[in-house]
Length: 235
Image (tube, rainbow, N blue to C red; front, side, top):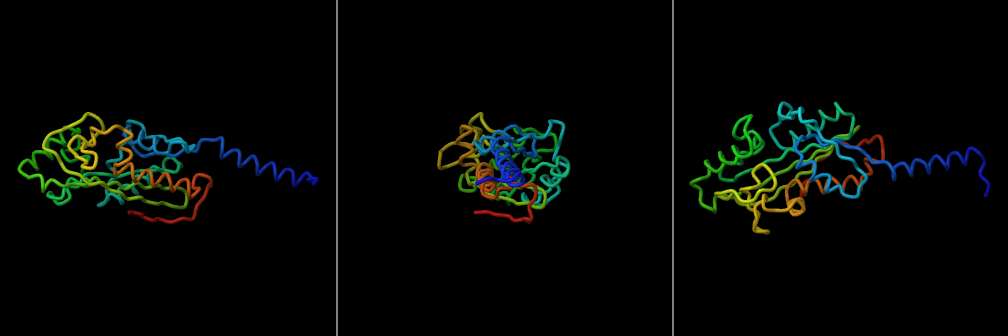
């Protein structure tokens, strides 16, 4: 078969476009300054040719988090930084919910001991509020809503993991309330887990893995536009 010049140009053009997707790294933004979250998402995306950028240290998402749920806050952050960056943007909102405290600290987990508090301050405040509670009343769960916003669409993945709040800290890894969140199946706190172990079982790890699988299946990063609309998914 002999191709005329116009047909040859079309075939070469299609081949070049396909080669581009295989050789270029797609770039997305994770709307966080938390290096732990960035490391988790980069590890989960693994062999997918996706470069994950984070926010600069001077950026803050606190003023954007005006929602009343994890899902609302994740979407607010993802929408805002998509408008700012123009990149497909992922944002998560996550926190700890203690049954005996009516779901507190919940969406206020990062500010539980005040706006300028650190992890140690927040842990100390929670342990003080729970100091008289017996083990059977120390059940809690970590919740994560991971949102992605791109041109023409948005989607949210919601996951959680259950555990028990200890009376003292254990472990040096992780961040936030990890040192007092005891994960019974592995008989360790989240702060005693390796990074790989935590990614496998954590609320954020589960949500990010489902997001990564959806990236592969949807072909979102292979197209410049999408007409998908918002959808929240949870197990």
